[in-house]
Image 1 (tube, rainbow, N blue to C red):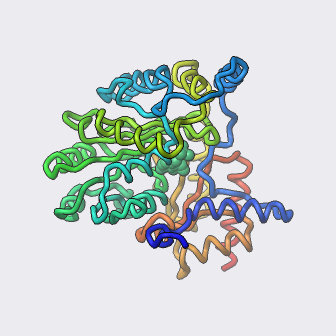
Image 2: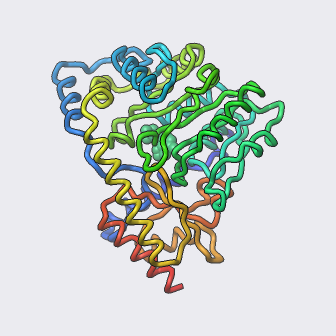
Length: 384
Ligand code: PMP
């Protein structure tokens, strides 16, 4: 009954793994889960209170489809100030980050178009590109090069059908941050070949070394970039489903059209709380980032001490992407780790062909869980 286009798209590997973990836990299994990209912290109190206030004041009806003006302005102000993106409120559409990516694919791509994206990269890009009838063109990146995208390989992959380049920095799954010279080279390629860039910056604030740069801040790039980000990771607000897209007005009009025909608007009473998240105190956010850094350091120490896995030191996000030395697919290894060692990790192959031979660990869990999880992984590997 379903269309071929959708039937051919695999279900989200990360979400189905998390469903399996939930069902094993319901059956009483003690699972350490490194599978979900979700902070374990609570949403900051000032944000929760702002939401309760808006509910109590009866702010419970439809909002404008692109979001309440105060939130569009707060996003634009933050993006001009922190990211150097030359945008105004009219360039902002409020929508869950994931929906922003899906709608960008729908709004900017025609069937047969090609989209260049790094391999490995986040699981849903390929699905969104395919749902739009377009074709993903993966650019392999390697462990030895720290998974940094090589602009020369982008240039070689361009054909008359290429329409977009997808970027994600800091990266899920590798935790890598794109260096400024690579962003600049990608911007030059986009301008030369008249391509649009979708820059997914959802981990922009979770960065430990170096700094975050938005490609839309580079000269001339605002006009050809859709910048996507949101509150989920920075403010531990995954369940609030709030993010945004920033684009030239023509792009925002197209996304707004899709939004108005799909979800109408985001939930109303969360939007004033999002204004509070962006404009209120940032102490909780900064504390969470410091905690993530401690956890990264702990996890890297555990890996290095055991000497069984190889791993680049991630500069951002909350993922490790270790390489293992076994004649076993990453899917098989992940399945065995879950069933035999009771640790949930995500197989590297879920993120593209270059992810084979790796698995992803989300260290957005407590330090006890990190110690216990690595203990189980190392014991399992030693026992093989
Ligand atoms: N982009 C990346 C790279 C992600 O890791 C995620 C969440 N796992 C998203 C987008 C989606 O974010 P949200 O849950 O805010 O829609």
